Length: 180
Image 1: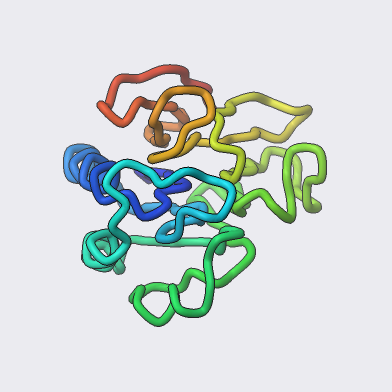
Image 2: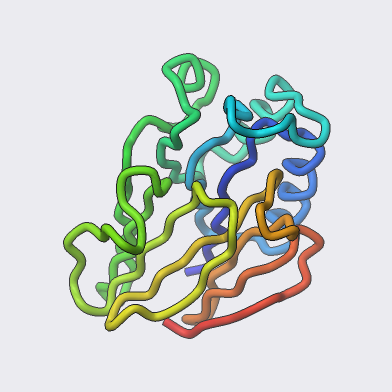
């Protein structure tokens, strides 16, 4: 399974267009969005080319491949304009080999407050706008960073292919990898 994971678009049309180009290049089977898709939030500066109404049709065009979770900036009005579910606090993605990827935004569960997970699971979260890729015991901890408002200076996302998670700059350059 090819998977692309992104978080914290925050309504940036410019960054979402770049992400759409990466999606087209990578051609993932599924796209996992870890919340904060349209609104920038009261604690963030406006992202580059803040235009949520332009982001909506871009994301809706991928609705058949998207699994999304609710970020702390999502509201009911977001669900009214997006054509895929965005209001769940978490999602489980079951891989063909039986492993589970638990996905959440990160404001309810985080690496210090993990949900109950089976050995060999992966935990993906967003929210902090900083890339993260490590093993914590027998759990893989993943954060793709932020597409539009990175706190570590790098606009980023993550891919999964052939059993390997890779963090990437929005320009597509690979940064770090870890096998699952």
